[in-house]
Length: 188
Image (cartoon, rainbow, N blue to C red; front, side):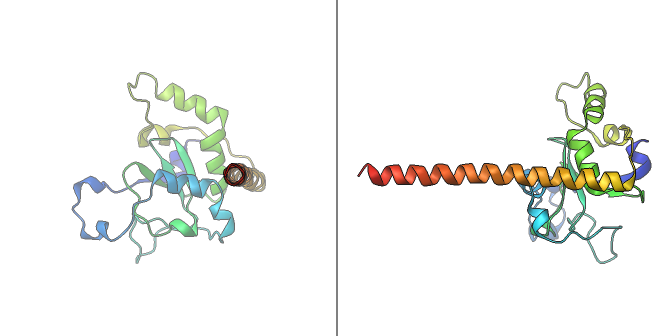
């Protein structure tokens, strides 16, 4: 099933035009924010399911639990509590799930890790001088959906793995700092 059949791709706002006064009052959602969300900050805060836009929300602002996709890095993540209320710019899109049988965490797994999706991306981006996924290409990707229960298991395991990898990396950085500090003190 094509992604356009099960979700809506809402492209972020073009912030370079600067035609909105409100753009200056909100921070922009960045690639670093996406990676922090993908690497586990979402597991420390409650995820609420997101089922559409509220009349009171700006459609370009990030909301907890939304799936956000970067066209530059071709990575997807789930917005955490830490990054709610940031402006989604034109390098990102909100992937609004319109199908009851699609789990957001599974969608992240499929877009980030699925061999089938990566192969389709490579084929559809052939001939591009700068290989960058476009909204049209994203909508054309075919995704086979296992049962919702299986999606939830795969999605949760994937996000837990990402968090574990981030924690291991952070632990290694802290150990390095500790050992360097100890060596500095011994060298005095």
